[in-house]
Image (tube, rainbow, N blue to C red; front, top):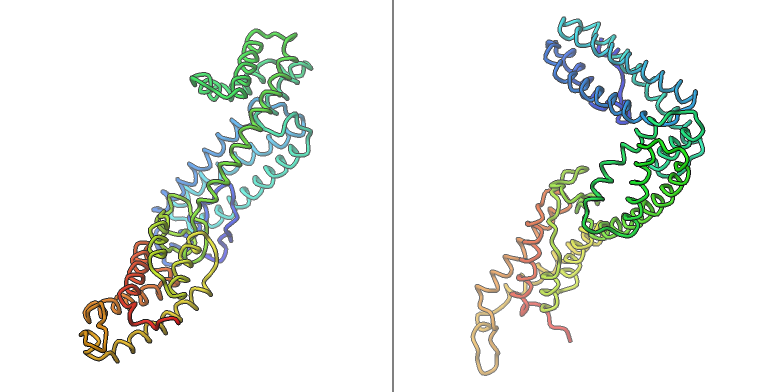
Length: 396
């Protein structure tokens, strides 16, 4: 019976993605012999989403100048919606009655009905895309087409009132602003005039007012799009990426939605750069600091990261060997030997910081480190280099 359940993938059904979870739950209950009645809550969520989609579609088709072919598609979609509702009702009865065969049968019927509905919606969208448009912007196009239908006597004024009604909330918000850009002021002025034309059923002024509305709207939308592009470019420049997989992260992401790694804190690197400028870091340490900054910006530099870690391990090993070979006299000034500035305890502390930082950073590629841990490890790495500076070989 389980093998008869519909096979769903990540792209279907587009209309009702919640159905994938419901099908998985049904499959699990059937395999384990659990009762089906508790799944009614999951199915109810699917029903709620489907009802909202139906309402949204009904609102979306209002006030548009459809031709006969459009209306055929819409009638078919309404029939499909009715069919989906009937299958959902039957499914609720199946679950309540613990009818396993009926549940599987109706689930398959529901998927087939959804496929048919999605196909009809796609055909309607394709047909509408091929039709000539009054404007590339949907809001402007719907008003212009409705107004044209009124001018040609094919529709009454209600179709134009409906289209203009969708614009009224945004118009009222703009009109309430104390100051507006010139483009917005012009748009509000011509739209207000178009409202009055529609209310007064002034057919003589309708043509000129529609054209004025089209021009003002076009200018306003173009201005908005240019500002939107500029804002998106600025946001991309400030965007952060996952340190492990490189996926772009949103501001509100606490973890990467792709690999689950904790998202980096929105920290700038001014402080780290100040430390770099004050401390002559070895190339491998500088590379590690730069790699973290690059990874946070979305660049792929894991090969450089792994190479720098290997060089860091060799550097720490060399510093340990130098420390172990230091005689006690190195910490006491004599006539012939200049004493080390740092104490033995300070050198040991610096080496301990380097080893701890190395151990932490080696786990970074596993995606298990919090941003604060990474920053702390880099800070300890730089401090360890500073504290063990006198152990490093001096450049000629």
